[in-house]
Image (tube, rainbow, N blue to C red; front, top):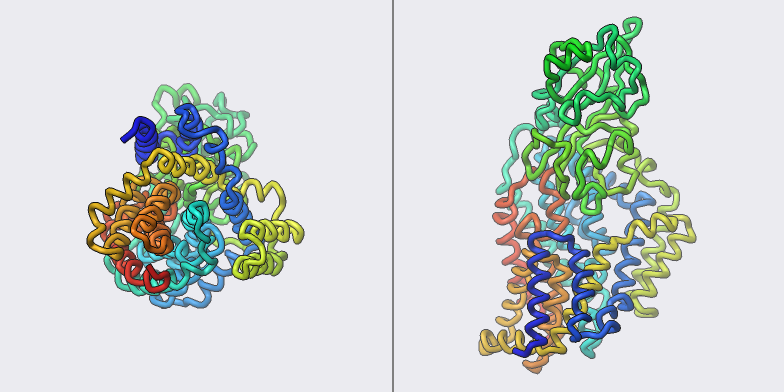
Length: 601
């Protein structure tokens, strides 16, 4: 091992460790590597930044815009409505249609986005049918992952593997090269989930009935800490705007106010600019000390049972899931100021299936956390339409509220069809086909420029650009040859089929700790190099890496798709291991058997 290779491996191990612990963010790690590699002298600035000029990076950015166009025109939501109507009350039919819909839609847009769209749909269906969300959320995530095996553009690792084939002097994959294997895996996945969903259990009686105000408040333990206080005469709080009331810091926050005038009761939240008057009743999320009660001239009242039910026409409750692109990830409720920005008040937080009771206002939120919010019903509709990474769970919504360009849906479908036809026929390069689709979406007002820029997931783009130079650095310093020689020395005598299985297993295991995008960047040159040294076709080996990178079924952190469904399904880490590990083994066996048949060695 030479010094240059040792330096590259140290940087590679450092990046993998940072990916695994989640600090700093993956895109920041990628930028660190972009800075570090040229400083070592191993790669030039041009070689390090070559990813920004890679056609596949531009293609990935364009596909984010195409997916946003489908969302803004309501195509995805209408598909969800059709699913709910067609499935009826049959659990078997529901799972089959749900997985088919998610997988097929995910073949042409981001699987994470598709799953985020279908979570409220599945929750709503579970409510109406009495089926446990636990038995729907995991089939949903599995279908999202399998969608990456259906077309070349379905997931970023496919495009990375395809780019590596081209870079190494071989032709790339066709648009549907992966599809036959993906369809077999999808059929097996549907059959497997019809059986395996029983392993997940019912999740308790609560998950099988409609979520009521009472059950939501109990889940987040709001009743246990909420107190009622009446404003008495000469209170220094009288005349103060509801949002500006200070009861001694965050430990005693005003959640809402009840007002009685001429036998008519109304309720206001802190998002309202109403001023407090004598006789108003404040709902506070902590007990106020006796000394402060006297100073503020407040009288403690008995808790009001069924308060939210009584005001359900004025005041709504909903769970909000923190999505993978949410601006809330890594921030606290105090920093986000929900009441001022979104006109809703956060009553509680759940993290990893547990309710946070102490200091929940200052707790840093993470992807997959859920918030219990209170506010006017239309505030939740605005929150859903804000495109800020908040997923409102199990809340009825009109498609037009969420889809600002609903009337342009036929044009969006037409643009996607044009893109697919151009890619399949090869008339123009894939990246040009995707850019043509983007231009068509803009021309027909399916999407505007601000929405298009917001749709691009820049952390993913930076991650790809930052990790691509490692492939060149490993090849330049002999790292790829070293790993290939090790694989051949260990498994070479067993034959190509065993090597394919070994590469699948290594890729799947690495994918447990780092993103599948980074895994594909690392494993694609190794797989292709192994094939070259064996003197066989590189296509089966490259395809194995693509399939293994999409097989992130084993843990809730293997993919953002899995992370999204943890809280709605009330899953634990062991649920994914129990259901995902056997299916990963099934996919590996199917891949090793079918890939050489479709792409001969």
